[in-house]
Length: 358
Image 1 (cartoon, helix red, strand yellow):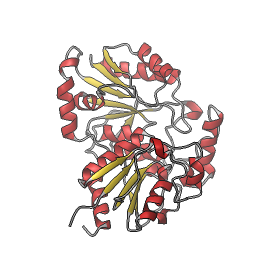
Image 2 (cartoon, rainbow, N blue to C red):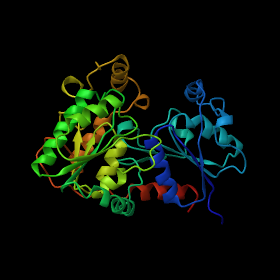
Image 3 (cartoon, rainbow, N blue to C red):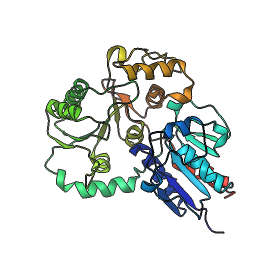
Image 4 (cartoon, one colour):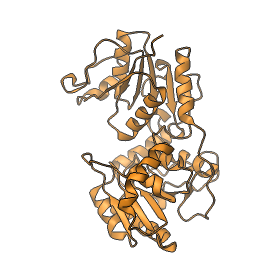
């Protein structure tokens, strides 16, 4: 038998696409990447759970034409109407969604999700602790080898600092970025080491500038840009002996934890806005409803009062990582890290293969 034909429907979000690439590579089946450009009215098709391309600018998107795929893997809610439309052309096509969809779960053959989305237990839902990623040991070792000479002037040990930004109810202000710069510098200075700092697509220019100004130890700073020729992110993971990651990014937390190195979480908020949930109950207490702005307040209200599929609660992931020993908050007593979670990519691949009787 020929292996199933796969279409990877890309998301507007880089973190989603990292997961999609990792899953497609893990399957090892022939695949095509479909990059889509959406029109302003796309959310209407999504909310109505339509099987439609009405929200797609087809002239600027990858072609959607026969031969149709046997499997669609997608993420990002904009892809739902597109996936349903493709399945209308080929009813036997399976749809695998990463994250949490708007449409009813029964419309998907498999949903691969993580705790912040609070999805129920169901036969077609696979619960992983962290998102899929492509930060394999071989990839990190190769990237580290390419960058080691360029970073040889920095004193050891090296601490990687992975910087996110605004996320739902949380804002990374320049003040928070400066606080991160000082905290990371204190950790590196205590050992006479240096920092490997990388921003991301969600890091504002103001936050990046404040972070750099607050760093008081030797460092190498990579400012993320979409057009950058080379990104040392994986090299930093491979070269560092410790990793600090802002707790707004579940994808970066997953990549950091996969290394098996000590991982420190940084709360981009503080006080009544803090990400860190202090109570010891199995689930975090309701998040404070008041945010720093109208949109962050709305997101907090959704977390507390709307159905779970309309929001996500990152605090659940933080608590599970800390409880399992995979990470700890900056400032907490130092503990030796435990091995990374089991091979969640292999679990996902096995579930998809079972959809085809393989």
